[in-house]
Amino acid sequence: MVESFGRDRTILTGEQAHHLARVLRAQPGQIYELSDGREVWLGRVAGVSRDRIEFELVEKLAQASAEPRLVLLAALIKFDRWEWLLEKGTELGVTEVVPLVATRTLKRLAQAAPARSARWQKILLNAAQQARRAAPPRLLSVSRATEVFPRVDAQVKILLSEARESPLLRTALREFPAPLQSVALAIGPEGGWTEEEREAAHAAGFREASLGGNILRAETAVLAALAVLSHELASS
Image 1 (cartoon, one colour):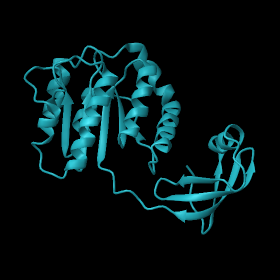
Image 2: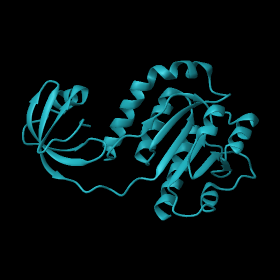
Image 3: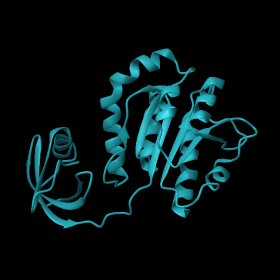
Image 4: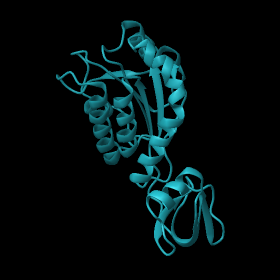
C-alpha cells in the first residue's frame, strides 16, 4: 500500500518496502500491483534500498465494481482464531470490522484486545493485498455489544442466533428489497448472546437469523455466514 501516486512514479516505504526488498528480494524491472486505497496500478521497480522502493507506473488497472458495505460485528474469541477470522473475513469482502465485548467474552481477551490493534491492522492489510482489494477493511475500536448495536447504520442488520425459531440467513436476507447495499452481521461469543444482548439488538433493528441446526464455532459461523452473504450480495 503506497501513500499516493505521482504522474508517473510512486514510492513504497517502511515495513512493506523492507519486506519486499529483504524477504521477497525485489529487483529493478519486476512488476507489482500497487494500491493507495483508491486506485490500483501496475508498477515496475526502478530502484531498491533497505526501506524504500521506487516504482515507475506502467498501467492503471480497471477498478472492480464498488463493494457493498459489509460490517462484521464479531465478539472476541481466542486470538489465534480471531486473527484467522479477520483474514478470511477480508477475503470474503468485509469492509468494516467491529471487535465486540459481549457478556460471555472472556475478561482477559477484552483487556488484551486494544493492545493488538496494530497487529490486526497489519493482518487486514496483508489479507486485502492477497485478495487484490484496493483497500483493507476499516478496524474500529473494541466496544461493548450493547453500546454498539444502537449506533449501527445499515440497510440490513442481522444477529446470528442459535434459536430454533430463527429463519435461515438466506431466507432472512431475501426478505429485504434488492439491491443489498449495506449489511451488518453480528456474531456472538462462545456460549452465545445473553437475553439482554438480544433485546438490545432487537431494539436497534437487528433481525435474528440462523445457519441451520448445527452448533458452529464462532470463526466457522463467520466463514459460513459471509459465504452466504457474498452469494446473496452478488445475486441482488
